[in-house]
Image (cartoon, rainbow, N blue to C red; front, side):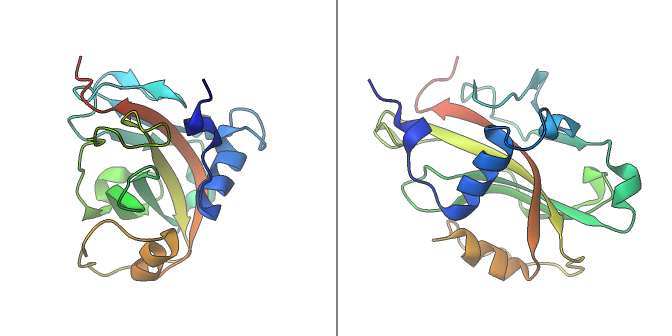
Length: 181
């Protein structure tokens, strides 16, 4: 049986992210400075997590970039590209100084994955969730008013942020409808 999660057409951003980070066209271990954890479980690309595993917000950490990050700001965005509703943002933290996530501003508070039955590329309720670390083109330096989710496109989302976002690293995991334990 063909795995459509691997072969599903993606928007250009997700293609770029997967080509750059998931398929390791960049130097091996390029994303090793970006860590995503649910409880005590570290996310490795393609790991399966139960809905219980992801019920609480993830912890993020990135390092080995401190010297090159002076004066730069970052954003972390968790998205579900397999949502039947569009580009669904599960979490967004922006204006993260250097590498200290606790000082970032929350645009969208964490919404746990809950893929609908019969959805996803294989229509089996399995979805991919990308946690993406971006370098911001500039500090947003204002409070953003969240708007209705999902967004039709990635461009709609970034236009609303009002700055460019350059992907630096990503991790992704898979969750399935109704799998709690």
